[in-house]
Image (cartoon, rainbow, N blue to C red; front, side):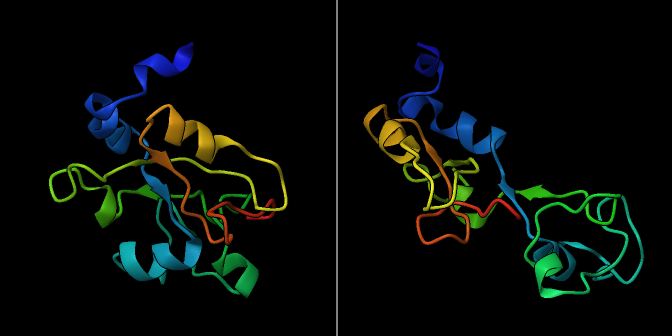
Length: 124
């Protein structure tokens, strides 16, 4: 299967490097943007204006193009046996078996979205 090149500890660092975590618009403005989104850049044209915008990972028309970053727990130098690559899983109201697949196939990917099960809502 295609999972062979992903499984095992020998691929943990590669997956962590290749799959950073998506960043909410609010978090981009407060933690990444040099101007806190007071000036337009290649990622965000402005700061989010509503709660829905704050929670968004992408907004059409170039308002927020989305941004991916490596979180501290994805740092394989600091966390060599627990670092992971990130993937975007379904919300908990949808059927997803990725958590079981990644566990039993020893694939170092994890979804850490805001949903209680680590997924993301359709609107995000």
